[in-house]
Image 1 (cartoon, one colour):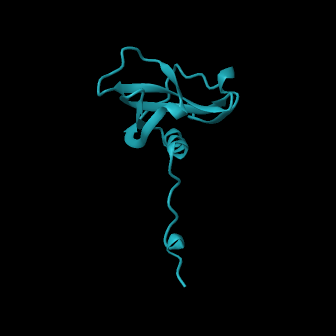
Image 2: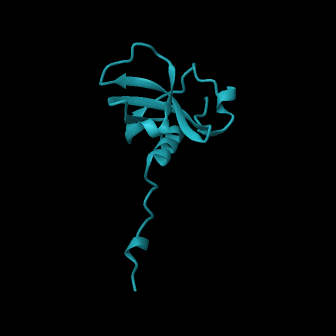
Length: 113
């Protein structure tokens, strides 16, 4: 007897956390919606704070336009929707400090190199 769910290669995990993990490992931007605003972000770290998940990253465009300020922003994962991995690569920002106390409970962070 065949079990269709077990035939062929296993499907990649789906959802926001696996998408962010993959983006961090591959240094690829993610497309997302935050507060009803469409944007592209270079995620640098995913971590927990008070039992909630957060992502810190650099917004590379907001509604198709460059952001007014280049900075590492903090986003609560539950506020992000329509997450999708893009083909757009990124380099680790000089503003990102992986040794910050803020990231003591980091699940994953970009390689600073």
